[in-house]
Image (tube, rainbow, N blue to C red; front, side, top):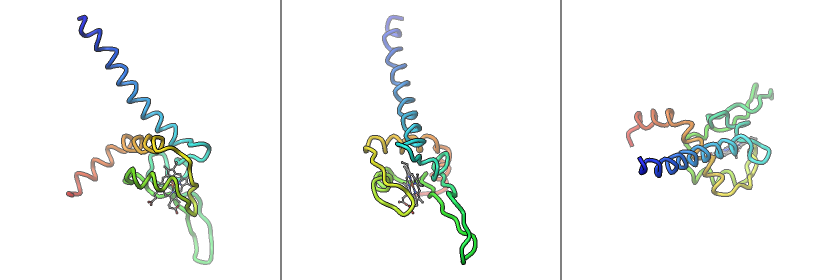
Amino acid sequence: MRYLCLLLPLFLFSEESFISHYEYGEMLYNSPRGVSCEECHGKSGEGKIIVTYQDIHGKEAIKGADIRRKTLDEMLKSVSTYHKVMPRYYLTDKEVEAIYDYLKVKNQKYLDTLDNNQSK
Ligand code: HEC
């Protein structure tokens, strides 16, 4: 019994720190200093149409890419470089990692089905 009492706080602490890492990633994904990733990459990084417009080619759309399968390296690079549409961010590696981990957990089911269908 005494043994259990010693272990319990440890367990609770690790549980909480895991959740807060996820929540930290969620918070960053939804609002990294103003322009949230969610606005262009959708709720879970699946991508979304940012704006549609009409030009001589007909109806065009600007889309935020599906980033669910991007590696951490790709994410680190992409966030800290300039693009046509996507802003350049000044996030630390740890912050980008939290966003990356958040998307991994959030899309676990989707990523699992991909692993099962593609034999590498
Ligand atoms: C204003 C819209 C916008 C916002 C906000 C935005 N992105 Fe993007 N992102 C894009 C677009 C559009 C692309 C496709 C490449 C391009 O043309 O910029 C892209 C591409 C990417 C890519 C893939 C790059 C590649 O290698 O193909 C990653 C990863 C990414 N974004 C992550 C993020 C993260 C993380 C955030 C938040 C910190 C974010 N983006 C915020 C619009 C946005």
